[in-house]
Image (cartoon, rainbow, N blue to C red):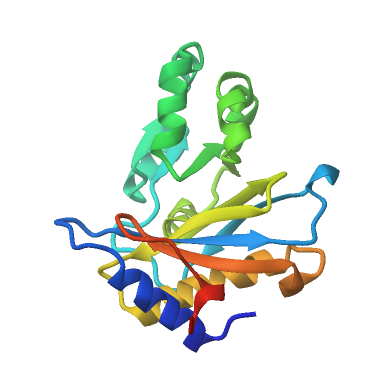
Length: 217
């Protein structure tokens, strides 16, 4: 629906509309859909590998113990949570919600998935963040690396969805490539592909949200 030149102009204008701050502002894309009956249970929950991830990357939490937990730490996972901690947090709604908000993606030893479901399922499920199960012997390093370079875009019974595509330290070209990756991934999940896409909006943290439909106006 949008070509590279249009998206590049949109990113450029969004950057210009963001006042300078002493931190790298995040860049976010919002996709607005049309001609979809959300009452029929429409939902999207896509993990998109970005061609140009941020330097920090997505944050990861691994639910594991023993050798798998050690390998996760070596792989650079931000936090490794053992079963006893998992059970404790599951009884504290405030702490559970905080943990869910703190990490972009969750991984779990496949043998712990039932425990995760009992303790944190009610908090992770509604956010679309149920852990990726990791079988014994799986290459945690590769899985962690892929997720660090990814973003999640999600919508449930709504005609809009948003996700981070980078930050202002990145070039316009890098942000456009990331935006294209997100758009392409979502379009594949829509009933009529790009025909269901009404608009694309890009915004930096402190800036104004700019719509693709206003380009040239």
